[in-house]
Length: 160
Length: 372
Image 1 (tube, rainbow over the protein chains, first blue to last red):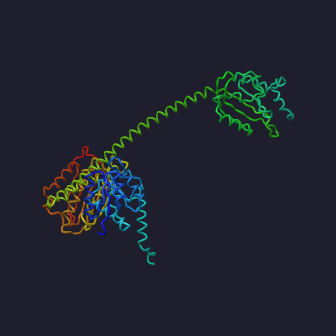
Image 2: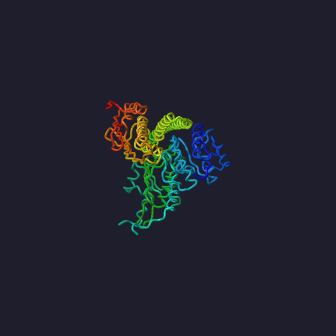
Image 3: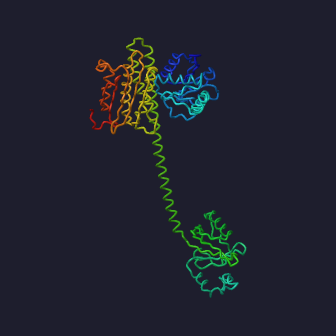
C-alpha cells in the first residue's frame, strides 16, 4: 500500500471503537484521532486534518454524527463515511458523506469498505463492487460513474 | 299588440289603478312574499311590496316603500352573498341565493331570494322583481346536519391522531430496540474479533473464528431486518446474497460464487436459525472442499416450492470425506438441531466433483408440519 491514510474515528461505543481502530492499524493506516462526541470530533477534524473520517450517527452526550459530517463538508477536501446501526435514518445526500456502512458489519465488509474508501481518497474512482451493507450516496455514485466513463476510451461502433 | 306605455301599469302597482289588473291582484294576494324595485330611481328603491312580504319582514308598507332592500340586512348577513346580489343587479342578471335577513323586530331569518330583471323590448331594465321565501327551517336543518358532520369529522380526526401517535410511538420503540440489538451484535463481534487476534494457538483460533462468523451471520440477519416496510417477513434470498458474498470474499479470491436466488419470504422468527444453518453449510464447504488453496466454484440456490423452499449449496471441490460426514463435530450437531427446529430435511449428495447439500424446509412456522 502507499502512504498510510490519516483517519479520524468518531464512535461512542468503546468496544466498536477499539475494533475499528485495531483493524485500521492492522491494515497499515494511521488513526490520527478518536472521538466519542460531536464536539470532540469537530475539534479533532480541524486539529488533525484527516483524509478520511468514519462517523457513528448517534454519539455520546446525545450529539449527532450529522453535525460532524456537516463540519467536514464545510471544511472541504475530506472524505467522510457513516458507520451506524441506523443507516435507514440517513437522508439521500448523507450530509455530504460518501457512504454509509450499516452495523452490524462483518470483518470482511469492514475491510472491503475501507478499501473502497481508500480508493475514493487516493485513486478515485473506486472499483464498482460495493460490499453488502455499504451504501454509497447517489451523488457520489454518479460522480464515480462519470470518472469511470472518462477513463474508458470511447469504443467505436461494433465492426467499425 | 302591447301599449307602448304598458309597463307604466306596473309603475303604479301600489296605486289604486293597479287594482283592476288581474296579474297585479294575484301578486298582491299570493302568500309568496314579493317586491319590485326601480333601478332607474336613485338607490334602486322598493316601489312595490305585497302583503306577504310585509308579514314576513314585520315592516309596514310605508316603512319599506322608497327604501333599498338592504334594510333587511344585519350583523350576521354574509357580505359575500350581498356582493353577489349587487353584482347580479349591476350585470342585470338573475340570481337565486339564500341570505340571512332580519325582521323589523331584529329576528333573523333565512331568505331564499330569487331576483330577476324585467326588461323592455329595447333591452332596458325597467324593474327588478324579487320573490322571497323564509327558509330558516331548511337552512337550520342543513346547518345542524353540517355541524353534526363537522363534529363527527373532528372526532374521527382526533381518534386518527391518537392512533397515529400510538403507532409512531410503537414504531419508534421497535426502531430503538432494533438499533440496540444491532449495536450489541456489533459489540459481541468486536469482542470476539479482538480476542481472536490475541490467540496464538491455531485450534483455539480456528474455533474463535468460527464463533465470530456465526455471530456475524446473526448480525447480517439483524442488519437485513426492518429494511423493508414489512417488519414481519424476512427475505431469505437477499440474505443469502449478503451472507454468501461476505463468506466467499472473506475466504480469498480463488473461489467463484454463483448465485441462483428467487425471493422467499419467511417469518422473522425463522430468520436466525435459517441464517445459522446457511452459515454452517457455506463455511463447511469453503473449509473442506478447497484444501491447499484449490480454486473452485460455490453455488448457492434459494428456490420456493409451494409451501416449502429449498436451499442448495453446491461446490466443485474435493468432495466431503466420509470421516467429515460422520464426525460428531459441534458444527454437525448444530446443523442437526437447527434442522429439528426448522422441521427441515437435509440431504448430502455427490456433485462429481464436489458436494451438494440440499435443505428443504416449510416456509411458515411449524404448525402441525412433521419433520421428515
